[in-house]
Image 1 (cartoon, rainbow over the protein chains, first blue to last red):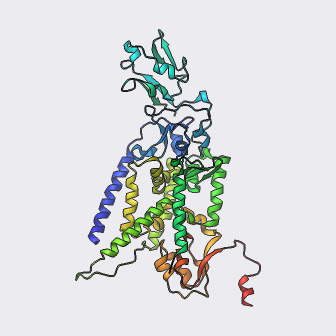
Image 2 (tube, rainbow over the protein chains, first blue to last red):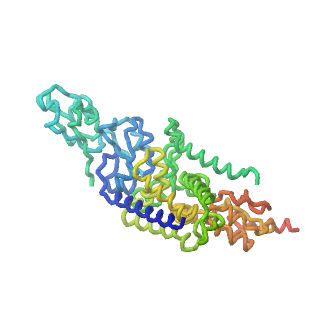
Image 3 (tube, helix red, strand yellow):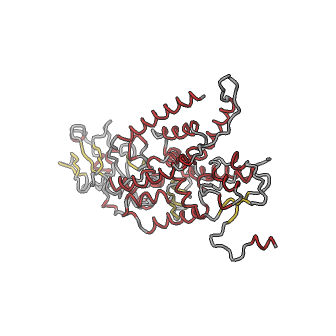
Length: 183
Length: 293
């Protein structure tokens, strides 16, 4: 029994080491919910309570797990599986206790910027496809059409909600939202 | 001993709080969040004072009225009831209580053998009780606050097994399951309730908060026969909490690490222990003197 205890202490140490090592990985840049503070400040202020994920009417907000390093417990949005639909009340911002998500207006949201991979885009390859253009909440501002056909993103108007990435019909989305580096 | 009413009530409360915690999964909206911070009925916001303190240290700009109020309410409640969260609410505490029970059953089934091969008497599984070990949590508390201030990061919210366990139950299991396993195994290696009574900085913070608590366990010095059942068997958070009070017949010597769980009340056959409201202001006339006359 004593030997068993010693061994379990060794195993314990190894598990702890593995755990710490995974924490050392620099956290990937997540797309944060609307109104998030700059990333450093956000990590300092977010309480990791998960209220925003629970009040989201579309369940768009996910909570990061241990694999994402220091971002553990923080909310993020995975646009391809479910984007932010920019609901009118912005429940996540309203409920945030420490104001890591602070009050923003609907049009001032900056979660990220969409980027089109023109080698993979149906419209740019010559097919008829306007999915991203038509579903964009800021149509004709964030996503504009060249020659009434080819979509381009204007980075000033794009809020990074990710609906375009969600609706893209290509097997791998040809329009991808990446988080803003607001530092 | 018969039916242990307080123990059943405590277990019931624990399961009730877990049900409340998980209620958003069933579509209820009266409790949103975790025990780090929650919104009741979408109106009343409550935040854990320790998490709040870390946030304020890591980002001083985040202090504002509604956040301060949400912390303040809980702060006042904890100052009144002491470290009651640990034994009545904490979901990780429930998990550890169950696993500790399992481990003690296992070690009773397979008792330790001495050199000649005779099985020794099954030991009562207790947390380590030297002062060095039980002050670990205060050291950790200071380290966490200092590191949090320097790195501007709420450190304990990242690593806290309690917060991780709650998030795991609601948002799904990830790599952080390892940390829960570490805590459970360390409780097996270092004695039951080792995490709660020796390491958990949250408990340390609540102990400090509850040092002037109103709701207390009261020891009636005249009834106590010093049998030692309460501090040797019943109190699972360690014998030092009640030992000094019982041996010196002084109810004020009960440690502020007492979690008001009430296990000692149930085990006492002489009715020497009970809950009482401790008045912060010394009364002009001592009620004891009146009864003596």
